[in-house]
Length: 361
Length: 200
Image 1 (tube, rainbow over the protein chains, first blue to last red):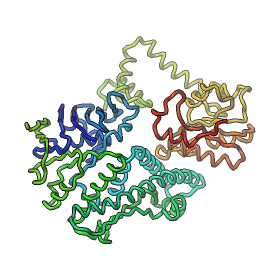
Image 2: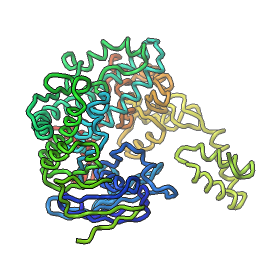
Image 3: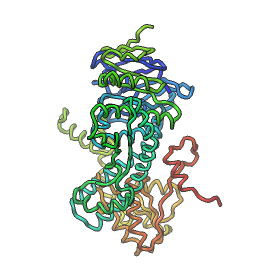
Image 4: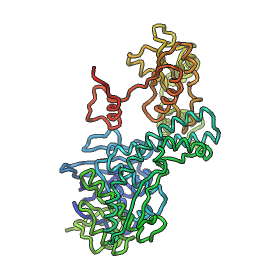
């Protein structure tokens, strides 16, 4: 899978821009704040209908415009693909594939996939469990768009359930108990399905992660990833019954997939708290690489790699190791400084004040 | 803060409170009403007043009604033993159009949604339970929307009604008739597979 051309209208700082990418490595260079990352963000939008920087949709539309359009032309399985997404904050976002409008914009998911490396990736290891759950769920959606609906359903049920727990204000009436029973049943079905999907994914990721870590850190150490919901043995339904009094007292859902943790260990030690920052950085890179390989494996074609200014954060050893082990396929790399020695781009794009110029040659 | 003269802004604000009408549409409708002939505009206000004066909720099923009971509840050809439970009067209209259902209805006037502050008490659930005995109901068809809130509402009512010895059914969800399998979304197709039936 690859994206050959990208057109932007009123996206971020771009009024109107066009960019061509090579089938292998394309480097996007320019000073900070000129819009390098926004090019990658636009490619990412076609894949996930969201910003990999977690920006709200309003932020993606140029100030003064009421909608933005991202168009990408690429090739998948030997066929040309024209993807178009219109971003309309407050309105309905629309998308089409090969000029055919999609019934829902979400149906665009899966048409193109990306793996994003960003300087913030360290948070995957260092920050709270929410980051790691999001990582797992993003990979699940990349593996199969159906998982997006599952994730949305769990979120919606939790919002309803939390609203009810809050309204109860600690009171336990027969009616509240009965309404809670219904939301428990909904959370159990959707929550167990999501947790099962995450568990199966982690089993698949774990060997890939150990390999990737050895490549990046250049030494073989034991790296483990486990997803073991504490409620698994008794089942979510029973766990919710056991937690009910606590949940009513605190007014929030305390048990379920929204509280689970992806446990990461290096040589048996918890990665979040017990290993060096250098090891954490290697582990974060390895998590991305492992996800990339699993998605490529399951879907049969490697996602487009987006490397957002990652080399500024890495020491030369890790930069070289990453470049040496980047899976073959299309890679778009942005950098404010010079390119690492091991990088040999076939296409260089210079970004300045909302314009994109390709280097001759 | 409105930028228009008092009465114009009042009109825009009122229109903006209607469901599905945003500030821009409200402004467009307001100026349309000021531009058309006066009697055309007043016809709208008259219709609103008339509807509010003459239409109330059916005492039995909570459909819209001109009298104490709605047209369906007073029609003695309808089968009183089967009750179809819907969220809104417009859902009732949708089921009526099928001409497949000859029983009576019960309009809940919403679905359970704690986010919007709607619990069973805000819905016509107690009234439904009250009808079961008096009308000799033998089957309750749960016809709420196939979304999270509608499913939760159906489950809630099912758990209340079933212990009373009344048959409780849920409408099937699946493929649209005349559609193509290849264009069906996965969730719907998955549900359709789940709800498959033996061929006679």
